[in-house]
Image 1: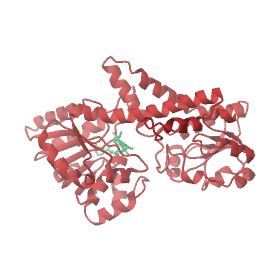
Image 2: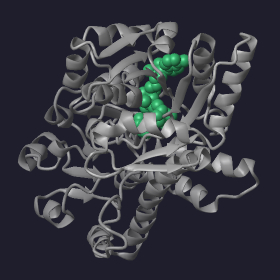
Image 3: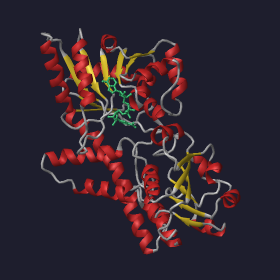
Image 4: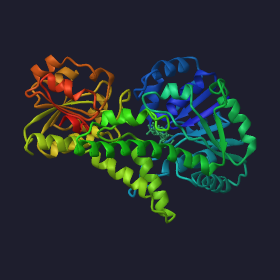
Length: 443
Ligand code: NAD
């Protein structure tokens, strides 16, 4: 099938690549000329496991095209995906300007019927807005070409995006027109063989499903972080508690890890956006507000430990930082806990020596001008002459470091671990002062 994807970010690029991989003919449009030029040269702008060969091979095979020419993009596909960003605006609501810009573009150039699929995460009612914008634009052209607007939210996880799109757990389709179901079944058929993963519903339910999913996941994290704070104060160990509750099949072990807060481009903005949606219709979303507040506070947990340990005097001290990305297997630093940590340490006059397996370029892009950030080539180099180690991301290769080397190169054997990678008793036996999240039993 001929498919057009507007927005070549984490969602658009991955979705386009997997659609091309199964044989669809996919045209990707972005307003970012540099990104498009780089992709044509085989330079992939983001780190996502498995993505580079997928893009390069499908581009070489002529099933994946990149352009900034929106008119050509609109002409290409019967199916037009909108996969552009929906960042928070000043009050935390989702800013729909990129989505409506694409809607306008499609209506401006379309010459035949299109199925417009909203893949971006958008508030309930956005499909109506897209429809309105398109109808107005068509009317201005004096045209009445028919079109459909479908909600098909994306559930991929950064760091596992290719695998998630190849084998989605569900394909949510929100539509008010039964006729579009068949082409969408055909589009997704290659990903739907093992069992039917398509969940059909009305558009508003599909739009809300995406927010409900992300808010539920964020709630699990904030819940665990709240219990971890209690564990710490009550002399309990959250890791024991986690295993204790995870063994209940109604709760399960997934996604109940305590830590130094959630980040990324989705949870923080989507929780905020649903709060604003609720407030706009006169509902006070107390639970969601608490989820956000707990998370905001949790991002200061490590700096609180640091201040406590160093008697509030960290001016001139150097901190090794392992992990800049908001989670492992990505280079994405949007809303990462590492950013709050570094910015707080800098305010206190400290220097940060940071290492991340994939996010170094991103850190350079965001903070490259700072003299109080040193980006180091290896995790060992980051430790050199540092007063302590801080861990913000649970990358696999941080999990079993050489503790003897670590002890030698750190000025003091102190670790502030925001992801509970190590066992407090063992760390104590190795001669470290170890701070984890909610490890009250060991403090
Ligand atoms: P992104 O910022 O990585 O990419 C968005 C792209 O859209 C950029 O390349 C930008 O240049 C482009 N763009 C902006 N305006 C455009 C226009 N008018 N025409 C063409 N391209 C345009 O964003 P992302 O992380 O891929 O997220 C996209 C959407 O998907 C968001 O709504 C997000 O909430 C949602 N989502 C993201 C994830 C994730 O893990 N990143 C997962 C599920 C859903």
